Length: 138
Ligand SMILES: [Zn+2]
Image 1: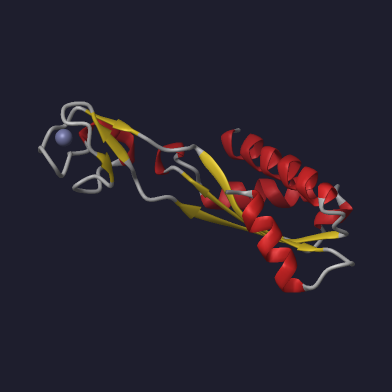
Image 2 (image 1 turned 90 degrees about the vertical axis):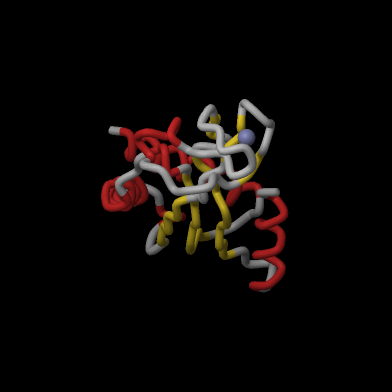
């Protein structure tokens, strides 16, 4: 199950970061994924709930999933950025280059990124926490 292994990877990575920050609790995680991952959000959230039910640090936490904007590299003219039109994610090779109109394009995205993590860290205030975690992901 694709979503289950993704959720498991997210929880493992966030747990690692939370421990590094001496956090006592994970409150919220925002992740984004390439539309080509074809993630079914309900399955991802369901898998997340199952995985965190065995991890105290994650009790009551929420996972938010966003779809990243498509980004392409044109193999004809070298353009990098958003495609001209939103294609069907299942037929990604159909993306059109807005610069030269070519369709020989390559999808240029990370499959999944942890955008932000909201942690409860006893020694720090809310604002500090957020900034620290955001910097970590850059
Ligand atoms: Zn092009």
